[in-house]
Image (cartoon, rainbow, N blue to C red; front, side, top):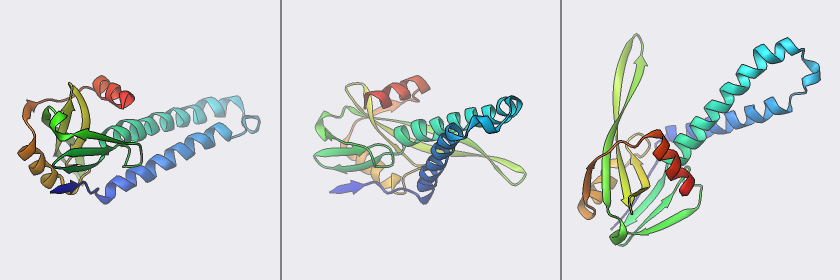
Length: 174
């Protein structure tokens, strides 16, 4: 039996937003500075530049590379492609995976005049104490199917919520 992850359509909007922010960032670098006075550059362009830089970093690095993984699991191995499934594929033998952690991420959203809290479940597959794959209810359509397969074949290690620094270290080491 084999299970392959499927993304929600909103995941591709994040990719499109990422392309937009990177293009906006490049455009800000290419704008000739001689056509603006110093006041305009300081008051308008600098905040726009910093905003696009932080948004691009957040969307591309933290969300795209760390959390949006394409995953294929069968009885013998797990294939993981990070970054919307566009980056290099890594193979892990199923018997080498120690198990999985799970956690729930709460996101506050405004719907009309009412704030709601949405909860998204995550599975973190672990090998040698390092997170090798993240499977999320927020990005994967077939999260329940992947979670059921994982629970049948891997050991549940408990609940864990990784911190920002550990997530960045995992992304750099991939």
